[in-house]
Length: 377
Image (cartoon, rainbow, N blue to C red; front, top):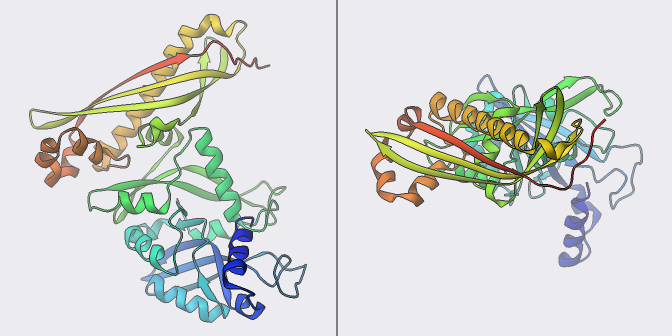
């Protein structure tokens, strides 16, 4: 809700006094869900309620600050037009924070992003997410910590990014990654479930269940948390300071280590007509919690375990994405083009098949810092 305050203030400052009748005709969308079933799209929109507390009109304090409405149509555009007739409001997408794609609607991902980006000045910084069920179920969850699930989704995504569990994807990134037929993207995937009634109004809650590997026109497969972590390390922005929280078992003791300043280096080459990737991951690390009596005395052991786990996670991500689907969800095409334009020219026409048949080697170097140790109990 907080991001709506600057939006409304900007309208007041640059447009003069805005009559409340104009705001009454707007549905300022905060989140969108896109589903597809039986040849028809269902678009669910969660929008700011100007008639509730916080609006500029005479308000009803008992009304929620966010309203969720949905409408069907043969296209997303017709569904949005139908939603405008249904609500009596013009749907504005400039403040959308999250777009959720239901599993059966992923086939239209690329076209949908192009439309929502241009429709009513769509927000290019919207988070793009997926669900293994219906998007409408995700937006229907009402949290007590605010009036809309979109706020909780954003909090979950930011927390997961800090822990290195996933890499949030924004609209402009997804559109860029899906700009060619052989490209793909891995979207954070949410699941709605029953439970945790203390946080929600209807005994429903959300969990970040991993990621959805999406090609330009299909939902390919689901990634678990380890695979998502591996992809986060491989992502183009990994050398900008990405972190990863990694649980380890050292002897009989449980230890949690935070990897930070993660850097990747990918060197492509062609051998006997096959693409080979030499992948190196480097990182610094520190203890988050540990039961070890003398944590620093086991520094070399912890470094070795971190390196082994890093190699395992990155290798698993490469195996599933490349060998399983010939997918490129971490900008490998850009790496190859930058490293050797001639190499790219020789494989670009059969890129997906080349990825399915490529080989790779993964190595890791982790350095444990001496200070900042927190002893667990």
